[in-house]
Length: 338
Image (cartoon, rainbow, N blue to C red; front, side, top):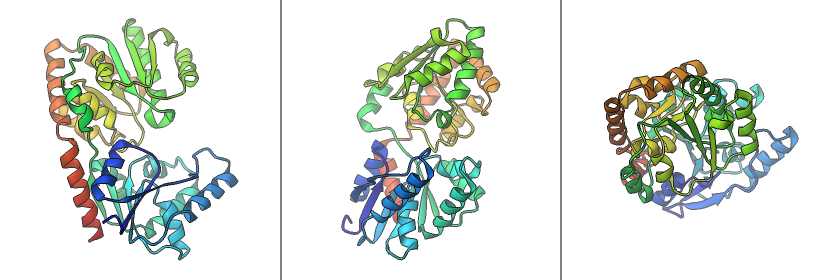
């Protein structure tokens, strides 16, 4: 299959790389992607350069949330490949909620006509495409927890009776809802002065400290940076919180749940369908007051109720194992080609 299929990769997400392995695909990493806040002329140049760098001669291209590069080359008649895109980022959510310029949104939506199929993550991903009235065929897929850490996570004993909140984040604070979380956390601190928030991930400490100082919560915040041992990080946790805006399906949330740490997520995150199966009260709107109340309500639960939510979280996360999810991904991918 590798002679017929090329994966166009925008990053190195381990789940997506496993998808590529499952398909037996060749790989191509984009050399100079357009950046979100790039100066417009440079952004246009990067867009064109990346588009025309896409190799030809492949029957099918599998794109990691970057369909628009080969689609533009195809629009110019310089590419004949079929394009199957994995919707794994907030792009279409941002279009739907007018977070991009109207010209950029129109271009990106117009180029969808060059795509032969979309693989969306969960019901949330499908709903966004329906709301945008994109008629291209689509299939639902799901990510998974890597086998290499699953057994460690299931052996974790979280500190459910403590007052330590946890989140894995990136430098895209808006996407991860860090602004909402910081505001909500400041309200939680007033009610529970000893509560802590652990933030893991390779992200800008100065920006986080600006948030912390703004909301007066510096003493309650632990910036841990890159965390090599996810299970120990989650083992010190009482609750995982991730109020994302348009995150298609956060694997970090699944990992927390596998470790027995209940999660509160936003209604605008794809993984909310999994959290909802545990308890619908763990789904929050994108509102700091609501999020703060839900955090406090959870922290005030009885020990037995927290243990019950922990067990349900583990069971819900157990569905998202590597082998069956990869097999289903390949099945859905091939069905789009058919």
